Image 1 (cartoon, helix red, strand yellow):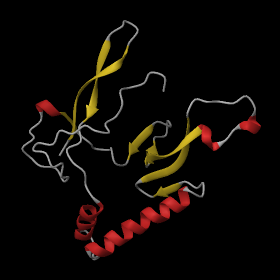
Image 2 (tube, one colour):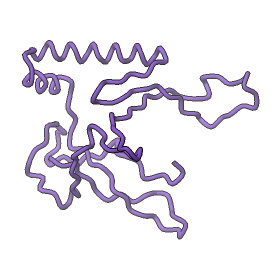
Image 3 (tube, one colour):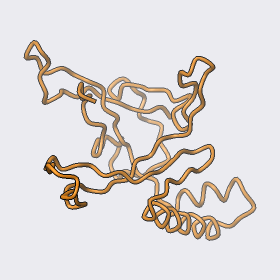
Image 4 (spheres, helix red, strand yellow):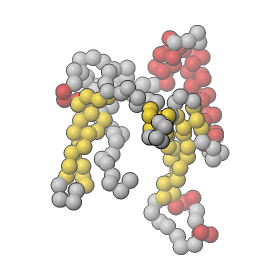
Length: 166
């Protein structure tokens, strides 16, 4: 099943005072840990319960390492790390800096390889992905998730419009 997207009009204006359109991913469902465990168990000699227990423990252990200021790399998957996002309230002296000036969030960078010229060759999880515009897609084929809605169509939590400042 391809990645579905739809046109999204930015709330930001470009230099010509026009609100431009950008693609935004449409999520057709959510796959739970239990569903992942069932699918992984089908590829292994482990039971669904064994796999679910392992995934649950992975989440616990990853959180412990992130909260100890360590990044966590899952080979072939990617790296998780904790970052602080400033709330914009800076201070003039380094002695006055405190954690209250920011919020914690977790960043994920998919695994990748580099070409000899240092350009990105592949990013796991996105390599080989096909994108299809939602209103032009054959939505009669169901994906792996369960959105609770016929034909999917939820775009909650979608990517924000491109930010020229980043």
